[in-house]
Amino acid sequence: MPSLAVIQGRQFSDQDLLQIRRLLAEYPSWHRTRRSRELCALWRGRNATARPVKPAHPRGVGEARLFATSRKPVAAFTLVELLVVSAIIALLAGLLLPVLSRAQANGQRIACENNLRQLQLGWRIYVDDHNDALPPNTSSTDGSREGYVATRGAWTVGNAFTDTTTSNLETGVLFPYHREVKAYRCPADRSTVRDEGRISRTRSISMSSFMNDTPDRDDRTCWHRFSQIREPPPVRALVFIDEHEGSIENGRLVIAPRGNWVWGDFPATRHQNGGVLSLADGHVEYWRWLEPNTLSIARQKGWIQGPSAVPGQDRDLSRVQDGVPEVPVQ
Image 1 (cartoon, rainbow, N blue to C red):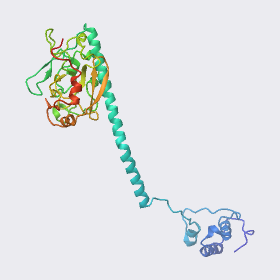
Image 2 (cartoon, one colour):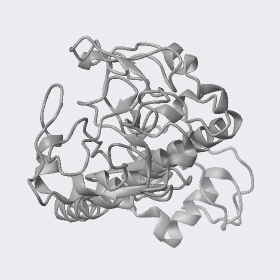
Image 3 (cartoon, one colour):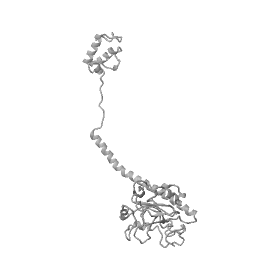
Image 4 (cartoon, rainbow, N blue to C red):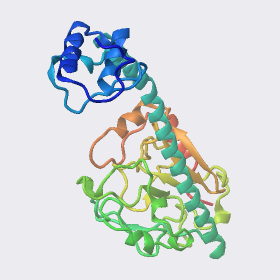
């Protein structure tokens, strides 16, 4: 091979090129040897430390070897590693999903409590605006679920089982005191109009039947004025109750007087086997139902009316009955 000191230009003879190809074939690991640097200098006409540049279209076996580069192996998961990662993800999901589910349920309960708190505030303002009179809670009936309808002039109007719009809510006498239709329906209620699975219901909340159910001055079956609420006192007297989706129709929740071991209408259990209610002094409570019989009733299909309680010892019904007056009301 000619001395590098002799070669200065970029023009090579055919004999020089032939010699370069022969040496390239002889030394395939050109990038690791001193000879490769000499060949690169000869090829490009530069000094001995120059680095080769890959041509656009290599020609011949020697050139292909000259520009061949080593490749590092690509890092990747093995099948065992993938299975281990999948198992860890599944384990974490199993631990986190119940926690997330409880958090969602608690959030819905808090939203429901806030709804009742707003309605209860409107109820109290109505009482102040109407000289101590409670908002009417009247209904009519023809014996069927569709026939139980809250009448015009009541706190709400219509039938929650059949109403397809919020117009009846907006007709109620309490609506001017809180103009938010979402407050009338629990966010956890997934029931639909006539249970047909198409249109969401507009209301899940009812008022105790002892709150001016019969607005007659001579009536003694319920309270008519706020000043009458003495036994039980306002701090224990039930007003609004989240009603079970299988029980609700008109605007009232019928509660049997003490000593009657039967539910009239039935409260909701959608909040982790509990319900939300408001009391006449303005505060809201969450009650967790205790009796297995209560939860069994909640699983019934169809229209729930007058199911039997545990005779003489139903803790859930007794607690509800503690929030209504003795009849006749004094």
